Length: 189
Image (spheres, helix red, strand yellow):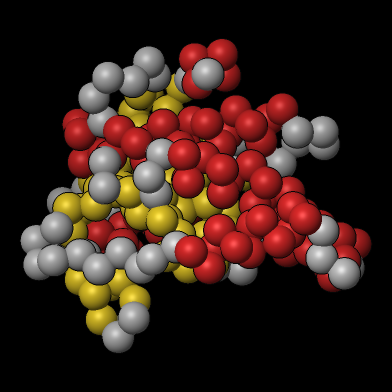
């Protein structure tokens, strides 16, 4: 039996419309990933894994919705969302990490954010910049946000600090500067 909270989430997800970018449209891409999910599921079982995914959704979905983002797809223990504004994508990421840290027990999320261009193909978004965003996320540790230089330069007006980390090396491309985002949870309110 579904709870009213489950129904509200389902109704909201059904109401999302796909983002169909025109050629040359710049968007911000955010990926989330639950740290340690595979081990958690292996040790505690499918029921515990589903409960952890529910806790993920309870901190992630409200921030995405509040800041104009759209979920493109679920990726096992995380998701991919797009935002029309890099600043809003970063605001959502900071809000998510602050909410995740307040949960007891805490939800340990890795978040990566990048900005660039994508194309729509057969009901899905594709493009080099999406691949980059996924790779940026791999660099984050639980409870952290890592962003590309492209996102950092377009995310104006936020009270966060950026600390340079190892660049992302992509074959055939120049190394991409990456930054850890440092924020205080009270700044997200």
